[in-house]
Amino acid sequence: MPQITAETVKQVLRDLYGYDISDDDARRIAAGGGALVTSSEHLKSLGLAGIEPPFGYPVLSAEARRLNAIKK
Image 1 (cartoon, rainbow, N blue to C red):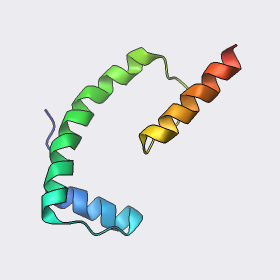
Image 2: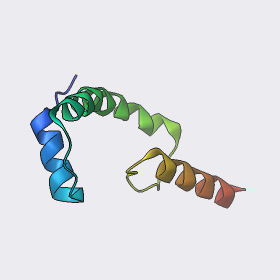
Image 3: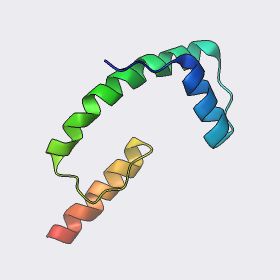
Image 4: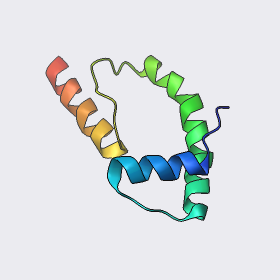
């Protein structure tokens, strides 16, 4: 499984979003992030072509609903 470090998580959140988080939170996010990167290969099998990279579940859900409405 890919390893994402807590330091990387903290730096990305700080640089991209201006968020400062605790070391504990960064470690928890990093642990989950490695699993997410590993399982993200399975997204290809869901038929989500055309969806821009989501930054959260609400964005992914809204885009999937929109694409499904277009197909009907």
